Length: 220
Image (cartoon, rainbow, N blue to C red; front, side, top):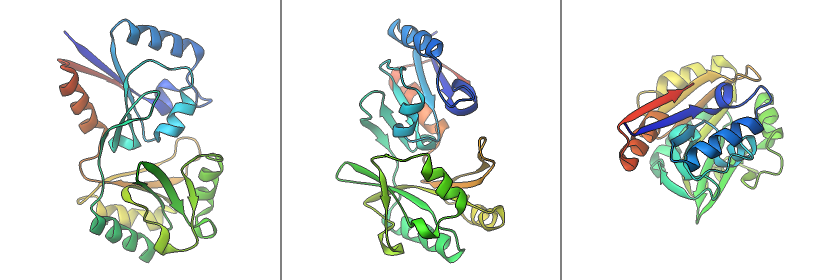
């Protein structure tokens, strides 16, 4: 039976140091080269996932941004993407700002991916998160709220107090795909918002169908 294996990254494939071990890389590279169907699914972007999985070079599709994108390992080529309609992105941004929540917004224009934010207005945990992304080619601080939406928007990350984020989660969870959880490393409260069609499960179904797999086994 042709089987697709899919693992989460954080808390599963990665060690406590947020890296794949040399042994993991060696085993997974060999198994994929021998024909095993494998992918990982993560909330991370391709850029940060690649840093965490340095040495895992096998040719395979990757599920990133909680299923908003499927990309090609190695090149980062976009194989499938989910984007907000312009009106949806504007509505979400208005709701967040009205609630006193400053987001990090992800968008693509002419093939260039950016994450925009207003540094001085971010919650301290948001600033701490960005401090771990120094040197990221997507990093785009902006001066005002009118500059937050860049090209085709596909993701909002909000790191704030639960008292602010919980009502927003309740408001948006029926219309959009929302992940509301505490970070496993910092215990900061996160609300991530993406198009309704974007999910790890949907991305796995797409890989299953495209690859002609009969069975899926998931970890994490």
